[in-house]
Amino acid sequence: MNGGARRIDGSGLSGISHLVVEVSDGERALNFYKAVLGLDARPLEGWPVAGETAVPLPSKQILVFRAAAANEAEKETGIHQAYRCTAQARAAIAERLAAEGIPVHRYHEDRPAEADDPFYFADPDGNRIQLVSGPGEDGGIAAIDHAAIQASDMEWEEDFFVGQLNFTVDHRVGWNTADYVRARAWAEGKEEMAPGTRRMDHRYRDIPGAEPGRGREVARPNIQIFLDLGEGALGIFLATAHRQEPPPERACGTPRTAIAIDRAAIDGWAETLAGLGVAVEGPVVHDGRSPLAASVYFRDPCGNFFEFCAPAARGI
Amino acid sequence: MADVESISHSGICVHDLKQAEDFYCNVLGAEVHSRVNFKTQDALRGRSIHTTLTLDDYVFAVMLTEDWMEVPDADDLRGANRTRHAFCVPRARFPEILEMLAAHDVPFEGPVTHPEHGPFGESVYFRDPTGNFLEVLWRRDEDAEYNVVQPLGHGGGG
Image 1 (cartoon, each protein chain N blue to C red):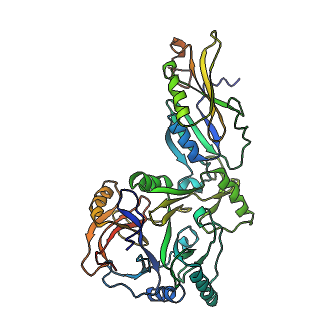
Image 2 (spheres, helix red, strand yellow; image 1 turned 180 degrees about the vertical axis):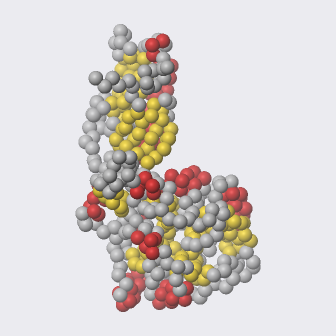
C-alpha cells in the first residue's frame, strides 16, 4: 500500500492508507461505489476489524465501510472524502450520477490546490464525496486524495498534528482578511461554497448584559487548516456545534482516517502517542491473513479516530 | 477627569494573523498567550478573531480585521498611521534589535539619535507585515529610580 508514496520527513508516515466511512447499509454502499464510482474490486479477506468491509483502490489504498446509524448533524459540516480519478473517468461518473438523479455541486474552493475543477456529490448515506481529477488509468476512482474531519479546538489539533506529530500546514483558511472579505460574497449569494466552509456569526452573542440573539450578524469563513500527509492531505474544519465525543478511553472507532507507516516505525509511534495523553490501542499485530501487518489506533485531542498502520509484506 | 492610570494592553489590527504572530514572536521575541475564535465555543459566541501576545510585561493582541485597512506606502517606515507602538530595550541590547531586523529582512530607519536633554537615546523605526508602525528605543534615564515599574492599577501600590 502506498509503497512508493512521498513520505513525511523522518516519520515513516506516507499518506492515507485507508478511510473508514460510516454507511447505513454496507451492501448498498458497496453497490453504489461499484456501479457509480467504478470501484472495481472485491472486498479484502482477513480485514482485522470486525464489522468493517474493506475494498482496495487501484492505488492500493483501501476504502472501508462500517454499518452505523446516519449522523444527520454532520451532513452540513466540512467532513468529506476526496478521491482522485482521471478527467475521463470523472466525466463517466458524472453521466452515471445524472442518470441516478444525484446532483453535482461545483462549490468554490478555499484551498488553492483544489480550486481548478470542483466536483462534489453525496453517496446514498449523505457522505459528501469530492472527485479530484489527475493522472492515472481510466476507469473509476483510483486513489484517496484527501480527507476532511472537524474539530472543536483548532489550537489543540495544530499542536497535536504539527507540534507533536511533525505534520506541516499546507494551507490555512480564516487567518487573513481576504478570507473574511470573500465570505461576504458567499453571504450575498455570489459564491456557492461547500457546507462547513462558511458561517454566520452573531457578534458577542452572549456576553454579560447583552441580549441573546441581538448581536450583529456577520459572514465569516469557518476556520480550516490543511495538513500535508506526504501523499495527500488532511483537512480539519472547526466544528460549528458541539457534539458528543466517544468515551475518552476508546481508541478504535469510526469514522477513521488511517495513515500508512513503515512497519519499523510503528512501535516508536505507539510509544510517542501514549506519551501525548490521547487514547491509544496497540500496536496491534494482525494475523497473517490481514492486508495490514500492524496498527496503532488512537484519537486526536478532539475525539476523531485515527490509525497508523503498516501494510502486510505480501501486499494486498 | 477620568484619571486613568496606565495602559493595560493594546490591540494591533492586522491583515494576516499567522504572519503577525510569526513577526512579533520571531523578530521581537513575543510569546503567544492565547488565541480567540479557534474553538467552537468562541465561534458560537461570535467573538473577534485575535491572538494575545506577551512581550515581557506588556500584553497586546494582534486583531484580525475583517475589512481591508488603508496601508501607507511601503517606503514610509517612520509614520504614525493611527498609532505607533514603541517598545523599550536596555541600551546594551539595542544593537541586537538592529541585527534581528536585518536578519529577518525587515526594512528599518535609524538608529535615530534623539536630543541629549530628552529621555530617549536612540530609536529605530520599522513596520510589521501589515504596515503598522513600530519603534524600538533605549532611554537615557533607564537607570533612574522614578522609572521603576510600580504595581499596576489602584493607585500604584497599597
